[in-house]
Length: 341
Image (cartoon, rainbow, N blue to C red; front, side):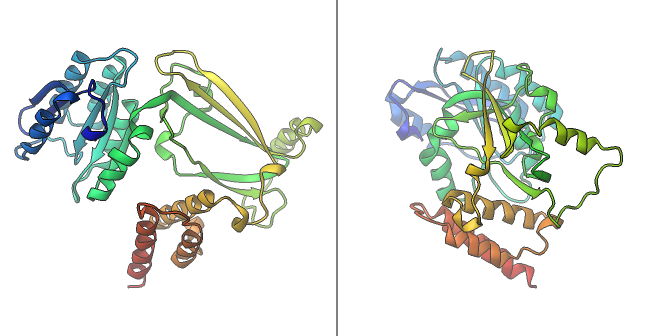
C-alpha cells in the first residue's frame, strides 16, 4: 500500500499492545524508507488497549489532516480489545464522536479463534468506513492494493437504498443479508441518520428473493381485512403497469450535509427469463449469497445443494485474474465434503 501512495501523502503508525504508543509520527511517503523501516520493526506483545490506540490514531490523523483529501485510520486487529473501554457500545461512541472530524475508518481483521467480527462491523459502520478479513497475503494484496481505490477513497457518503415492490406483481420478498445495515423506513429521508459510504470504482450488490403474485410458492395467506387489496388498488394506476419495483437512492457528496435523490423503476424490460440469461457477475453474486445462506443454515436454501452452488459459480466465473473466484469454488467444494460427514 505504501508503494501505491503519492510522495506528498503521509503515514503514521500507532501500536496498542499494552499501552498505546506512536511508532511513526506523520511522515511523508517521500521518506518511504523511514516508513518501511517502522513497519519492519513492529512486534506483537502485551494486552490489547484498543480504545486508547484508536484515540491516539485519530489524534495523529487530525494532526496531519488534509482538507479536501482522504483522511483515514486503518485499524489492524483481531477485535479482542481487553484493556480500557471494550464493549461494542463504548467503542461505538468513541468512533461516532471522531468521525465528525472528517476522518474515515478501515477495520482489517486478522487471526482465528478469538476474532470478534461483530465488534469489527460495529466500528466500521459507525466510523464511516469498511471492514475486511485478512487471512492470507493474497487477501491483503486484494484489499490494500488491487481494491485500494474502492475501499479507501470515498466519492459518496451516507448512501441509502430503498426498494418498494409492486404488490400487483410481487406477493412476497426477502432481502438476503444486510442484517446489520437495515434502516427504518423513516430514516431514508432523514439526512441526520448515518449510512454507508461508496468508494471510487466501488459497486454494491443487493439480492432479493421474490415470489410473483399468483405463484404456488406464496407462503402467506391474504390479509383478512383487505389491506393487501387496498395497497394493490393504490398502484393499479396505468402509469405503474409493467413495473416490478421502484428503487430510490440517496447520497451525499463528501463533506456535504444535504443528500441528493436518484430514482428508477424496475420493469419487465429489466427482467430475464432464466438464471442463465442473467449477467455473469449477477450469477456469481447469487452463488456467493446462496453459499452464505447455506452456511448459516437458512431454511429457504435447505433443498439447494452445495453442488448446485458450485455449478452456478463455475459457469459464471469468467475472467479470474487473481484467482479469487477459484478460491471461492474451493470453499464451496470443501463445505460440501464436510457436510457429508
